[in-house]
Length: 167
Image (cartoon, rainbow, N blue to C red; front, top):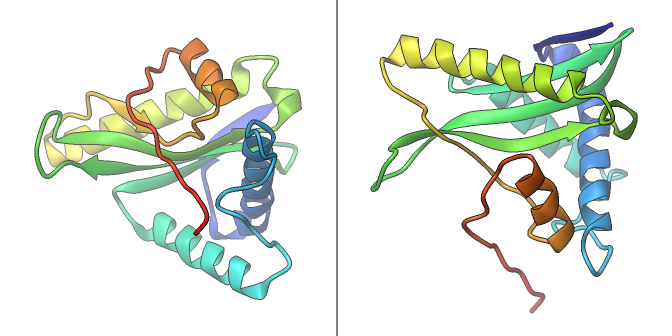
């Protein structure tokens, strides 16, 4: 049975593994099949930076990291925070920074819809707490044709593209 909950400090290593899988999956959708930004999971520095960000999210009341767990194993997660625009509307929005579900759990909508519902619930709590609205969700995704098609099927509309090149 899948359990959806907010992440705990003790989840750090399993979330780190899921994050690496996320980067690998994203790289597969790129023409170069190469991660950008790259990751070297063997470097102590990478884990230290990940741990710093992980703990920062857990402590931030305007951010959340929700995990899907089955039999003590994390099978998916979503990391989000409240974004604020300096200009334009809506001023506040829910920014999904990372979302990943293990491939074998994508075939049935239970994990994804449960993570989605938990994110909605968290956003509603914030709306009440801060007396504001979070009318939209935004997410950052790799802008490959495969990723764009994947997110469009889920009801998302692309509106910006981020480019990179090596110097």
